[in-house]
Image (cartoon, rainbow, N blue to C red; front, top):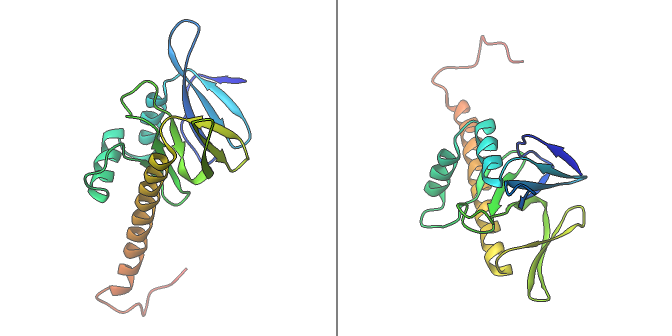
Length: 173
């Protein structure tokens, strides 16, 4: 497996799982669409870096999600609504055991031998913590968050048609 010093979530990231290195440090196993990587960062560090890469702090992303999903716990983090990159925590994000799952890459969630399994777009099956119902609820929150951001972007484009003056005389590219 390829090893990396740092990482940011992108379109092909499916799951970020915690793992302990031989020296006891908390690292991550990242399942991408076509490969797996070991990253010398904890899942939370990867999420923090990914949020900054997307233009806000982790806390800023959570605060924005709280406004859209009031009263919800274990909120998803939407890194790019256009590419449907929205990561769902399987446990409390403060837990070292928390995994982060890209809801967009999950084809199906099912129970097998009293364990919760997700089947990803590449047909890989990955065991996650929590129940099927819990994950489906969190996935629904992720979808709602993404769709709200996309609706807001569309509204901003629609506002451009409500300018106070005519378009005449302006070149359109």
